[in-house]
Length: 462
Image 1 (cartoon, rainbow, N blue to C red):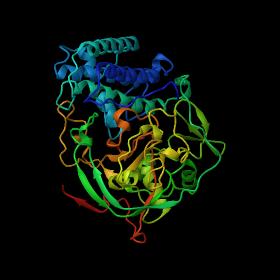
Image 2: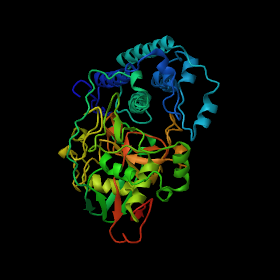
Image 3: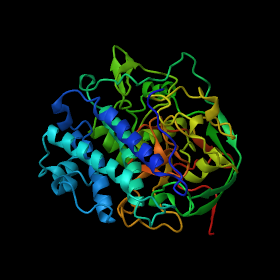
Image 4: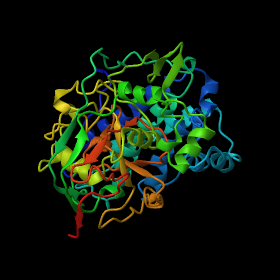
């Protein structure tokens, strides 16, 4: 996608004013492209995902976040519109649609023109702010300008969040931007063999003095010894998951635990969310269009569906955990070149597994970074040294509840510091993101079956 560009995050120990301004404006423009793809004023008041706010919320959310954080650190003297900054200020994380409806039933959403005007006013304020505010380096987590960088990275996350919501709208409610290009799909489906991944020492966590922005959950440390294991060379493809569907995987309760079976039954789930059965074959919903199911692209499912597939594949088949992921992805190296992967809008969609030779890790596994997020077996958990940041105390701490599964690696639309190696992501197991999975098996105890194991190997204190 030549005209949709996302630059690398700035180094906060040596960046200048123009670099910050460019990085901010780029994030704003990318979000604008998505927002302006919606067709019809009433579309903004729809709720395409019953676990998310109406779309009008996302029109104002990033803007309000900037204002709230900059006021908090004293870099802006006052709010622009206090009512909007309250209304658009806080997101949601309901377990059920009923819980969401109860939380937002009393809210009065503004008319679309007023919301757009608010957004444009914030853009003017922030542009002037960056152009005139003294820039002192380095910008570390205790620096007032950390609030600005937090706002930019938060907006970049919501570019991805909004793309998932817009993808759930009826086709007539969206119009693909002229800049948007999907990846190709080929007839060839590569064999997804199981490869041995050498064990090693996984060193998790972002250093507190790292020169790029980080979220509180990224910082800290943990060292884990990882035993050798087997992993699928590629992410599980639509073709492979189609075999599971055709084998009655959604009808066989043996492949689902109690909670996931309840979710599947209550919501009448019969196949992945972005598949549609038509005359005996499946169509695929891309970001703005419908097409024949691209069999060589990675399947996109939630955690429940990924685990059901693992159980279908047989005893001992599971998802990768965080330590294994890091060993398989980086080994003893710390490669960071995001251009090698389907990240940062390289395509406007997933891409065929194995298509990018540069996305092959030293372990022989493809697309550990980019393409789609990879569901892990770990619940969200803090690293040693974790502390919530005072500007966003509920960013992650409230999710250490065993109700949120980790995912790593990023996807095709992941940008900013979210696309870097230290970003630790998470969602509820019934939520959808641009996320898929690969399968893993133990080497020494394959016949015993380990199920959904949280950790591999021995954890060291450091």
